[in-house]
Figure 1 (cartoon, rainbow, N blue to C red):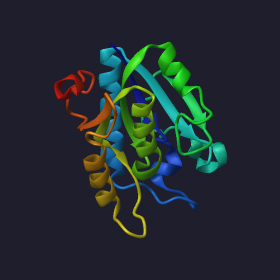
Figure 2: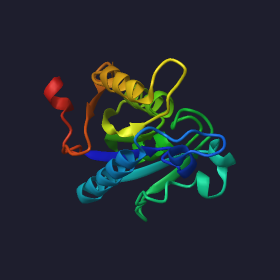
Figure 3: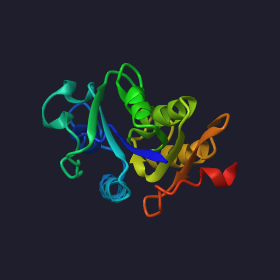
Figure 4: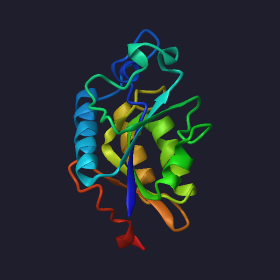
Length: 185
């Protein structure tokens, strides 16, 4: 089965913060876990895709780039997006279908926006999805603390489905590229 790791908006200014952005919750753990998942993806020889949001740092400069502490493999594909969805007006869906991907592992930022949207859209497009529960993050909002938002999304997205395709949540230390979706059907 072909698989892909999708790292969403793990950009310097989004993670660290800037004049326009507040840095995300638990950035050290986030960076360590994203790197761990990338290492696992390389060992499993799965496709690697990084998504960058053009609204971060106005789409330019160091703040726009994937965080400097994240190891971006040379063979990784990098796509830029203009909206919340990694699939909207990007080559992502065609890329995944061209590679015959059936299972996507998702990590990145921000939990309640781009990560949530990617997980839901991917299952609607016919992929099984594993959200790495300890490799996505966000910032506080007016109602909830970031830690609550992450916990809520982990609970909500575990078992979210579009018919036979659905998402589960696992942690970075698990064998993410041995999907468990078949155990639930």
